[in-house]
Length: 332
Ligand SMILES: [Zn+2]
Ligand SMILES: [Zn+2]
Image (cartoon, rainbow, N blue to C red):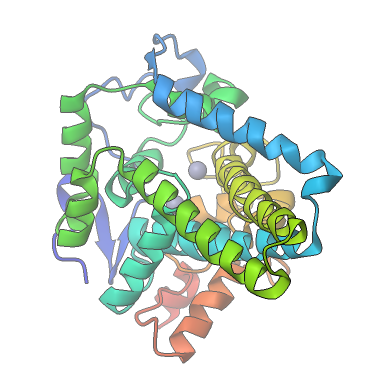
């Protein structure tokens, strides 16, 4: 339920969904074209930078055979589905950012809790950034347009402090009021380094449970410790880095490479490779043309697995008010 939709931001409601097809101006130089962006980089966020670099360095350990196990590979694949498909694209993106379907509150909070374990910011922050992206796509106030360079749109925008505390507060006011109406999401916001806290908590829990299972099966042996290390490296470290990159590739690759079905006012593209990585998010030009829709499948072969999962949720009673593509909405 949308208690306080961010209508002030100019985000318009279409039926039950928030339609972000209409660009808004915030009065903050949004008339400046992104291709001529000349602004300064913000201060480097060293906490983010050190965390990103450390996790990438640890992920490289996966090249050593000692850390390899097929159980680790399965943990990576299952983790990618849970965190890289259910939590971020379906939870943070289609459910929270676009309200393209509804779920029982407990299920929404479960998806948000999983998303918090990916070290990708709080729901209010993620949603605010994403709605801002739709409102200013590839213009000055787009937080991650590749018109400022591929590396900027992929990760550099995350490690630079681009706005003051006051500006962040007003961004929340403008784009995330409906998210912050939920007491659980407000509680998350008040934690010190909330994404870090959730990430650490889930990593410790995962390590304890997986080590206990390995020791139950193999006893207190070197084999048990080796398998535990493999499960942690592949199932937490490598999976987190992998889910970062597939999420970031939607911001970078799909605004640079691919074809366009719709002449939208931004540079969004449909990219089959990113679609494969993200189970549907790569049909990004389709998404920008109709962001309210729960489906980004505009041609029969543009398979959108995330939408099928949402439909499956519907069959299980976990999703209602699923917004169909615009042509089908208008046909009714
Ligand atoms: Zn986009
Ligand atoms: Zn979106």
